Image (spheres, each protein chain N blue to C red):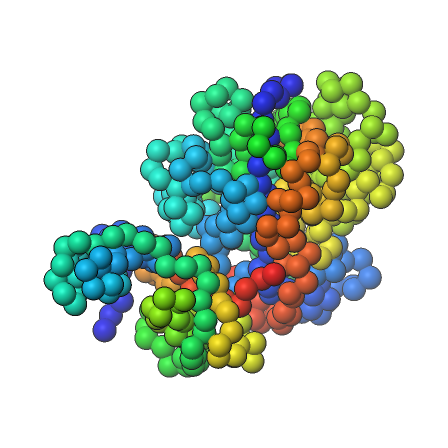
Length: 135
Length: 349
């Protein structure tokens, strides 16, 4: 699937991309990333905005060596599964780290990074990634 | 510009990417002598970092130390000569990433390496006038240097940020005086659509760096009625390791009052963040009640100079975010080819 570089699309998702802001369903607790005001599981419209925590635990990770066209400049890069305290899980790139720096179960923290860019003239897509915390 | 009233630094933060290249590695490629290199090593951005992402990192630490709600930030100024867009503000992305609601003034500033302290001048003015409660002053750069040019040894990546607001709630420091000294001096420039800057080699020392820096410091001390002996730390813009120490020598400032605020030998010249980075490193060790003179320099050319007094809130706020030396020490070294890739100097791949 091609990455959607339409500025309108990025603009709609910027709260999620910049701050992992989601819509949590007050009825069933499901976390919704979509901008639609309807819960994807129970169809409730009683959704509340919340920012996922800045820190989570790295559940699993792998290195992507054969990326899609729009991510090829970054390859090889690490993709991880991060779990927050409430059990919510998120797929994310892991940055500022080499595979040997990572261990499953370790704490990782959210940062804002460039995800990709639409050539030299199009928009730059910024969004969250996670990295080993700096102390 | 003179006496500043009711303006405090509420929080501060610095950010340095983890990658470094040794100056000897650059010298190896270009056949330069290794005994006269301007720095030991310099920071290099990750492939996914630019002035905006680094500004967010530094500002996040500054906000954490300030303990301020994002809704209290009334202005975000980002000074840089490497704004990722020629037209489209950096400050709006930074603010949204930090959760600052839309009622704020965003301004991107440019004045070579002086753009960071310009942010501080402007935010201080807005706070002092009572127009805003608090604001973010940021300097951030992924500086450009033409392959093989002298600048390539020093042009580095980093960001520094200050939350500036009204005093009275455990502030880090107060800003007491501010002064600027600028003239039209063509020592360094980058024309529109050019990838790399041009410069005039030794002309960038005297009459550019030294004349403006020394004039600003002398004017500030005179205005505040202070002598060198009254001040605990002097921080200068640091395009290399020699210049700040040479400026201090002219002013007869002892080396020990300058060295804490020099980081350029470890991370290179972070341009708009450079002098602010020195301030961050001084705030990481200073005691309450100490006086600091912070002086930037930007080619083109000019200097901003500030008299800053540390306050009781500093030790407690310092502990809320990583120290600059912790960021500097996580160095991972890259070779010249990797460096070229990270600085987008390999085109057409």
